Image (cartoon, rainbow over all chains, first blue to last red; front, side, top):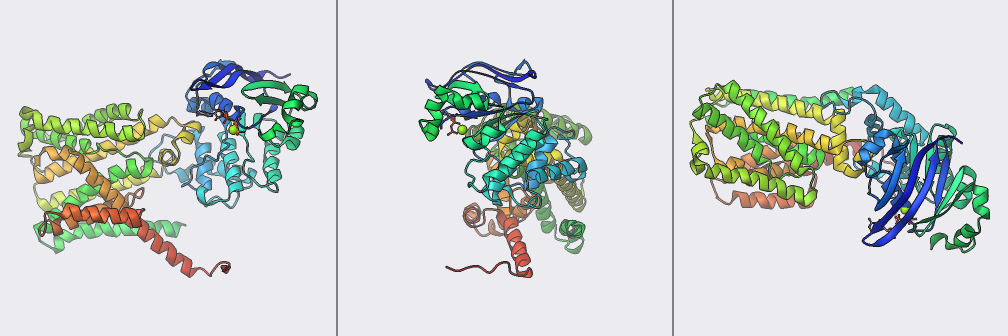
Length: 254
Length: 321
Ligand SMILES: Nc1ncnc2c1ncn2[C@@H]1O[C@H](COP(=O)(O)OP(=O)(O)OP(=O)(O)O)[C@@H](O)[C@H]1O
Ligand SMILES: [Mg+2]
C-alpha cells in the first residue's frame, strides 16, 4: 500500500455536551478513493469541518502528510494542499462562474496580493480557469452570475472551485446533494475523471450506494459518530454490523 | 470588448474635462467652492466604497482618518510651522499606523461588533479633540491653516486632479488580483479563507488603503476651509460617506462621486431654505434603500440593460398560463 497522506486519530467532537463524533480513527493513503457513508446526522460533515479547520475537535488529532494540522487556520490547510467542497453549495454568488474558478486558481499562484496589475493580465490563470470549466462541463457559462445558474450547475461549480485549488487531497461532501436522479451520472462522470488522473487522494461523502460500490477503493461507515467499519466495498457489503445498520435495516435516512 | 472598454472611459474623462473648465466659464467663486467640496467628499466617499462596496466592511469610524488628516496638517503647519511636505508625510505615516492598529483590533471581531468597535474608536478621537484643548483648540478648532495652493481656482484644479488620480488608483485596485479577493470576501468570507486566502491580511490591506485616501480627503478639506474642528472626526461624517455611497451605488467607485454631487448640491440648495435638509436627505435615503437598493448607479445600469434587451430580438415567447 502507498503511504498514509491523511490520518484522523481519536477525533472527538461534542456540541454543548452532545457527542457527535466519538474516537474516530481512519487513514487515507496516497491515491486512495475512500467513501464515507452513514445516515443523516452521523457526523460526516462535522468530520470534514474538523479536517478542513472550520471547526476545532473536542479531542484527537488530524495529521496531513504526517504533520499535525489540528485546529490550524483553514487557509493554511488549503495552502498545504488539502481542500474540501460543501454539501450546501457555498459559492461567491455575485461573481461570475469564471471569476469563482479564477479566484481559486489564483489562490495558489503568485501575485494574489498585487493591487496594481489587472486581473485580466494574468493569462495563465484565465487559461487554467477555462480548462477547469471544461472539466466540470461549465464551458460557455463563464459569464453568468453564480447565483443565476441552475442547481446542478452550482454543484458543478462547487466541484470546479475544488479542482481549481489543485489540492492533492480533496474532500467531497455529497457532491450530488439535491440533484435530480437523471443528473447524478454526469456529476459522477466528473468525479471519475478526477479519479482517473490518479493525481489525487479522495475522500467522498455520498449516500448513493450503487454508485460508490464501483468507484471506491474503500468505504468507511459512520453511525452515530462512531466509525463502525472501514474496508473494501466487497467486505463492507458482507459486514454484518453494516448490513444491520445500513443495507438491511433500511436505515439509510434514519 | 475593447470598444466597450474605451466607452467606459469616455464618461469619466468628459467629467474631468468639464470639471476643469467650469471655473474658467463661470467666474462665481461660490460654484468653485461648491465643486471643490464635492470633489473632496467624492474622494472620501470613494475611500468608503472600497470598504463597504467592495469588501463588505461597514465601518462607522471612517471619519477618524479624515479628521486625522485635517488635524495633523493643521497642527504641524500652524503650531509647529512644519513645511507642508513634511506635514503630508506625517499624515501618511499616522494614517498607516492608526489604520494598521485599528484593523488589527477590528478585523478580529465580527459584524455588529465590528461596527461598534469602529464607531467607539472613531468617537474616542472625536472626544479627545474636544478635550485636549492645548493641542486641538477644543471646540474652537485649529484655525489659520494655509491652503496648499493660495489661488482658489488653482486649489480646485489640484483637487480635481487628485480626485482623478484617486479614482484611477482605486479602479486599478478593485480590478487587481487583490481586488478580486476583496470581492470574494464580501461575497463569502468563509469560503475565501477556504480557498487559501488569509482574509485578515486582505482586510488589513484595504482598511489601510482606504484610511490613507480618507486622510488625504481630510488634508484637502482642512486646506480648503482653513480650520480643523471636531466634527471632522465625528461619526456623522462617516454617515455622510455611507449616505453618498449608498445613494450613488455601492461597489462602483463612481457611485461615491454621484452621491457626493447629489448630497452637496441638495445641501447647498436646501440649507438656504430650511435647516431640515438632513431630514429631507433622510427621506431620500429611505426611498433609495427601499426602491433602488443598488443606488443611482443601479438605476443607470437597469436602464442600460433594458435598452440592450429591447435591441435584441425577443427570446423564446413567454408561455402564459
Ligand atoms: N454547529 C453545530 N452546532 C450544533 N450541532 C451541530 C452543529 N453542526 C452539526 N451539529 C449536529 O451534529 C450532528 C452531526 O451533523 P453532521 O452535519 O455532521 O451530519 P452528517 O452526517 O453530515 O448528516 P447529513 O447526511 O444529513 O449531511 C447532527 O446532529 C447535527 O445536528
Ligand atoms: Mg452532512
